[in-house]
Image (cartoon, rainbow, N blue to C red; front, side, top):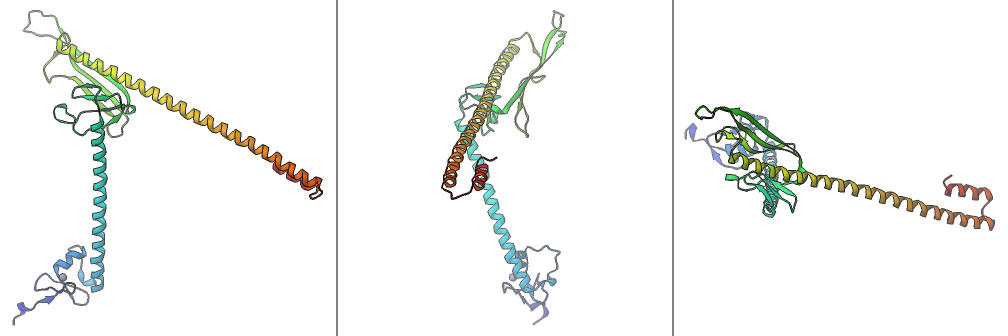
Length: 281
Ligand SMILES: [Zn+2]
């Protein structure tokens, strides 16, 4: 029996092996599989640990792994729930006005969205409230262009950019861009063309819709302020009623003490003291 036949036994699992054994503080052997179960780093010295330390490390790591797993599962469920809620919202969304592929509005539920799918389709976009639209701005840029190959040498007006910017109540994406013309993509767009006029027409319809939304928001805000004010007045009135009730009961109490005074049960000083206290003088 030579040296290489000598196998050592893992103190944790009892497995016998010749290779990759780690020595513990009492010369015990730890197999590589059990070493992995401790969660120790490869450079950490096992010699400093007792069998008890190793057992504790294995238990601790198992507990941590389970906790991590549970946390992951919890996060997964939360994500799933958010996705599900969004799917439901998207399903409920009914377009009442849209600029095809660019923006959709649902006037019944006061929601809007920007399509997120291929070719302007609606897949699973974020659904905004009307109140998330804070303001808008129209960008319209034009320049004069000379076309050499044309007989008429007078310049023509060309549109470079026709864009509506929305300011949105969102820290992440505070502006959304609705592009009608952004220069060069399809060549120059002459202002005197059907293509240009139809784009301006489309944009005007969108601006009209945005103005309606902003007007609705203003009214909703005004209504909320009014309701808050009404609630405040009601609260004050209730407080006053309580005050009146308190005064009435104070008068009743004083009459009771007056009876005791008349019957000679309490002295005049005691009665006056009680009266002052009840009237809050
Ligand atoms: Zn082992």
